[in-house]
Image 1 (spheres, helix red, strand yellow):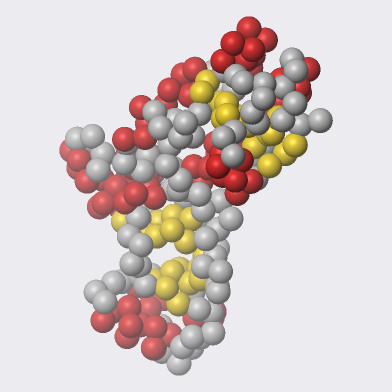
Image 2 (image 1 turned 180 degrees about the horizontal axis):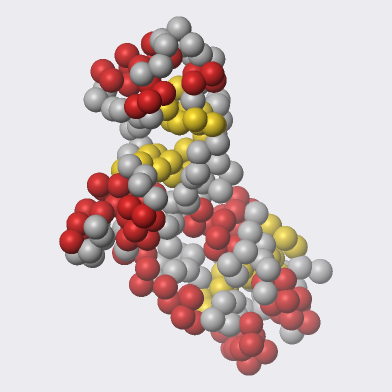
Length: 67
Length: 164
């Protein structure tokens, strides 16, 4: 079950080499994204997550406000 | 959207999946840096004057007024001990009876704006609504600073020419 985290927990996980993924469309990612985040829009997760992400490291996903 | 992404990643075999549910809105509302084409645009949080005078609810207006004017300001922000914005003192409030408390004279519950709003958008809004200044706060209401309309206009792409 995925774990919900807040901003401080995100920072702590980044210090542990977590991967940060914005799942919004590319246009929104290109305008603003969290430092170091990669973009994998929700619809492309099946195709791109296995290729771009390391299964052995934590993964943090985010969108605009979780909705 | 991110909860569905998190569940899908788990089903794809990722074992340590976390969802930053408050998302980019929370990050930017806290005034934290971003990357991307928008990151270079001046925003309300960058331009807000951090040195704006502040005061508490139980202070006397006369003392606050002296302090505010001595620093060359015509406005002060009323905050609590956590720097959460509770009210504003503009010229009209500052001119009231100096023996009254701040709580009695302040404008309560002023509209506040988030640090990530682009300067150009703020300039347009403030001009349309006749606002000379606007408190910039984090999403939980803590004061970042006071944005002056003249500062917002000066940092739009075209300066004052594009915003009447």
